[in-house]
Image 1 (tube, rainbow, N blue to C red):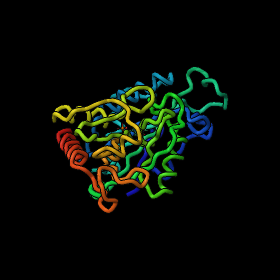
Image 2 (image 1 turned 60 degrees about the horizontal axis):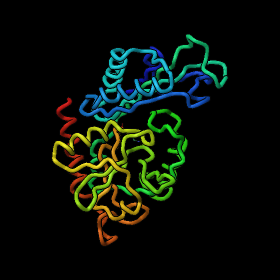
Image 3 (image 1 turned 180 degrees about the vertical axis):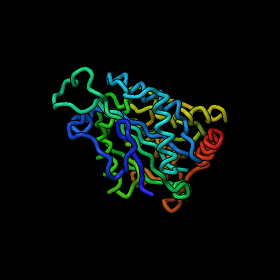
Image 4 (image 1 turned 30 degrees about the horizontal axis):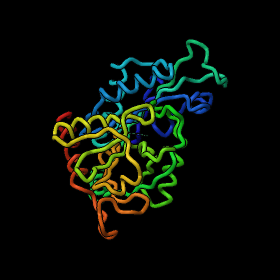
Length: 291
Ligand code: PLP
């Protein structure tokens, strides 16, 4: 079965889908996106993702080409046409195609909407979480509005590649004051020695994850103390556990940071901790209830 994508009002074969070379996202990264988890065919935390998409659009003064009901319909069509049980939907809106000028295109230029759905193997994600993954730290060199989910991801791409070349899964971005802001494609968390969860506040220096918000809610409901305060790399090395969150990784334990095991005394036994794995299980439970 060939994959089907959505491009500006049409469902097309994914391999043949395309947009103009004049598209503002191609020329200027002038666009926004969302990634929504599909769990047993259902879109998880759709409300939160659509609200964030609307906020990103407002911040960039972009007019989405479709209303929310139509967007919801398109995403469901993609899930159905591609028979996705587990995976994600990707949605991107750009300022459209126009003669290359930095200033906005003429009024009335239609914005571009592209969406596609992709399957993944849920067992592979679980196997990865049981082992945990490694992260490295890199300087956070992004612009001052990473809270907007734009397709302008070059610093994130470079950080992620650096992580890959270092044998790691994620790069944690560290600001000029030595605090971890977030991951290149995830939010960053530690569990301190008292058992409290720590994560950077949801201000303009991070992309405030929809998964992050759900984990905060789950943790509070379970009575886990939560502190939304930035932490340093040194505090991470002192922590009991560390993990990342995101719509594709969900809750993913970090077992080594810059090669040093987290929460372990022996470098032989870097392993995920109970809080991270417990929160991952709770996130799945929440997803099951959403189906
Ligand atoms: N931070 C960054 C930089 C991201 O790219 C992502 C996800 O792509 C996240 C955080 C997590 O956001 P969400 O939980 O909404 O997927």
